[in-house]
Length: 274
Image 1 (cartoon, rainbow, N blue to C red):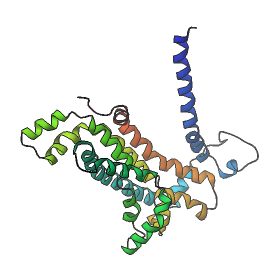
Image 2: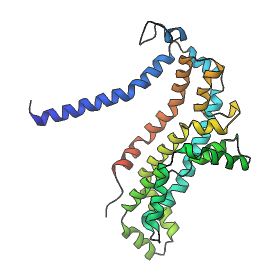
Image 3: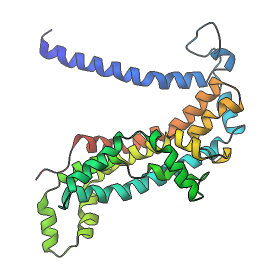
Image 4: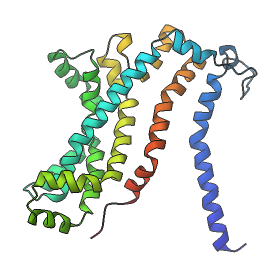
């Protein structure tokens, strides 16, 4: 076998290996959720359950607030996602297409926000929301997730690839800056926006530490905090926790499948090259 045939086989093998590494924890989660607790905590290892059961899923829905937690997470994630687009898109357009003094410095200051650990901001954020009487509300859980710096970067890179001629032609026809942004830039940037949508949704959906701190009522928990609460409410029942985690993973999987093609296009391209 020559080298030209060996290279595709090697890359395909590596690809399958990384897919298996990524998929194994998900498979383990689902299999564990179908076991009884006495099969999870045992001296004898068994990968598959001897008697698969959906009892853990039934218990999750009947003896916890998991439906409320799912609804809360949807409210937080979808609202944060929409607000992130509303904030990130015009900021990215300004950085990409509008020349103003200090533009580069301001852009790198925004990018520097990605380097600040969120844990550093927890105390001032809590004091701020407490002063607004917003502690123990879903609004407090979602607002810190608005305006995603990586989203600004992705959109800016895409907008910079859009030919200037399109804007100049629109200006000649009498279009305003806002009309150009709304009618030309936004439609052309759908694939990049899809990438920002999935990133902001997953970022808000998986958030754990901040909702844990800012929300006190059990019924107001998001799904991540609620699942962690299984340990306190039901002891440490790993099969139940895995069932809750499997339920919490479903929206993310469907969300990714729905936007998959646009996400790939947004990552693979940097816009239209003029």
